[in-house]
Length: 559
Image 1 (cartoon, rainbow, N blue to C red):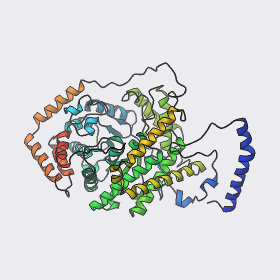
Image 2: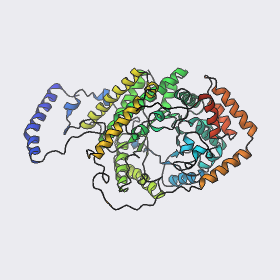
Image 3: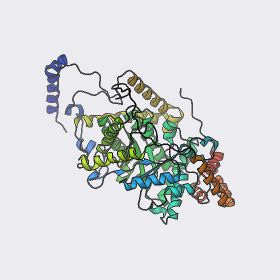
Image 4: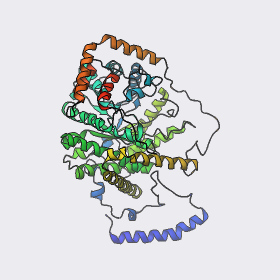
């Protein structure tokens, strides 16, 4: 893109500028110190075409909606339609979550995102001893189809898209959603949304697993296969870098480890006999947006280009839709501080701006009070308004990839992709993502990055406003959401009522059929799970049936 003569002149002039102009300035006013991105990529004081000397417009950028999709997956991006404003919500009872969903929709939210409590995420009913004290605390409690019916009561599933953050029991919650749709008169072929269904990142970073990797991968692939035939509009997985990043990974590690996991899922589906171009278009991704604006924008752009190359070159996908990286973004929960909580509004704004400049397809903005508790109605409204102001007032959505061509952003895009590829190749040499997880490789890398970052904060190499600098002694009083501990008793009572009113003989038969199917490795379990759900078998009963066949995962010691 740049001829050798011009590049030579730019390099010579930059050297002259450094010696004659910069050196005099530094004598009078020294620079603040060493400059690094969150991935420890050194940041130069100035970027020129010389830093991207091998840049080729058509190979590295191209045009939006065309390979390699660096500038965006759709030809007109936000000029046609804004990203989906999908606020993550769910707490307490199904009734409370239903009320919050309806409030958010009334305020202009354009998609639902369901948060489930910890017991639900690890396959325990609300009356299980392991659930005590956690029911409804960090999400909505769902033990049976009855709860799911209430969560979506009065919300037409043929007119809304829903994302469900659920992994180990993803097949069960998806079965419930399908059944609720049928009860509303919406055929499963018309349902639109996403189930996270990303179990590998649970082993890497989050810990919400139930079964060992092999049967867990079987359940993931069962969903791929079932939805390809029966729920064609459904995104069968949201391969998540978010939790990897929140656990302490760098931006480079977030992309590398997410794609290593994604490669494992794609290969598992191909091994099942699925045609890559039949399922790859329904894969979606989920990334974090942190505070370093330019690094985050470059990360999203590098991810789009790298995934397109992986799908076209590694997996030989032929359909351009299979090359497209479609992703949801959430602003960073781990960056929020309890100190001076209103500062979090500014942090979230910067992070949301990075996601939009990076070309996200949907976005959740965290609320300023989430360092204390689940968000209050006031806080979640401000978070939603942040997206709406960016969309309607800032102008950043009026042109596509507005930072494209920036010497710094293009350099960072190239560098992040290059470093991510090194990690992926290293994981390939270990035998792939599952083998790397079993060896504790990704877990150790993330822990080391998290430790390094924490030491930098403690030593003030990285400033966190209100935490290690510009500290205020006075506390900021804010009203926070509190989940009534008595709801646990009410939910247990509802569960007992369901068990009394259902046909327990049919429940026993459905669970027995599921057990027999799970014992055979070549049987798709989704139809058996759907039948059990329809008979009002509980989440815990279904998971216990599968535990009896698959066993439970015990993590390796990685210290």
